[in-house]
Length: 201
Image (cartoon, rainbow, N blue to C red; front, side, top):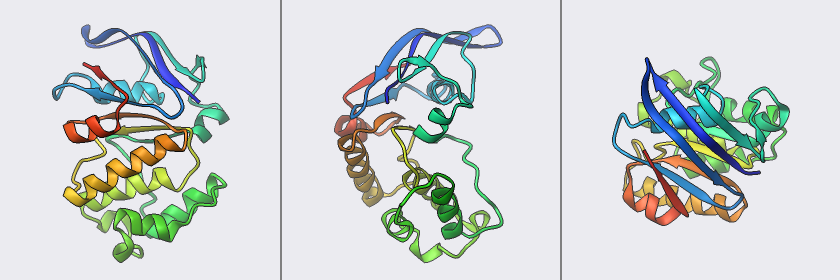
């Protein structure tokens, strides 16, 4: 599945954030959205998944206008934005198992926990985690479910050097598996290693 925008525009209070923006990311490709803080990167990603509505232009999912409520979009698009939600009353491992079950995924939850470095806190409730651990849980939440499109807002946040090395490898593996990846990032090494091209805001 592909994801993109055509002639996209968005403004806050009449002040343009971006305008006349068009790009597509196809299966097995990655597009990095880059630019300074406040340039609209997060807003663009929110529009791509239907959490915000463009003022003009169209978000396209597999060539058709994106409908956030459609089964195809809900089953195909995995995202980690700046407002990830968690089930607060179940443990980390239960949260991931529930997500996998809801999506009919055969994911190996313990393996994903180990990959993101959360095995030691698997039985804790999400609200008890540090901000870095919650970010890793957000990443794990994307990787335990099926996906043809992956949208990530600064996925390198709060990851140490080893974590960033892992993230590069993981996103390259996503591309190799045919996933279309869109991510906003300030990490030049991550962009250089993973992105097929960049969109600058």
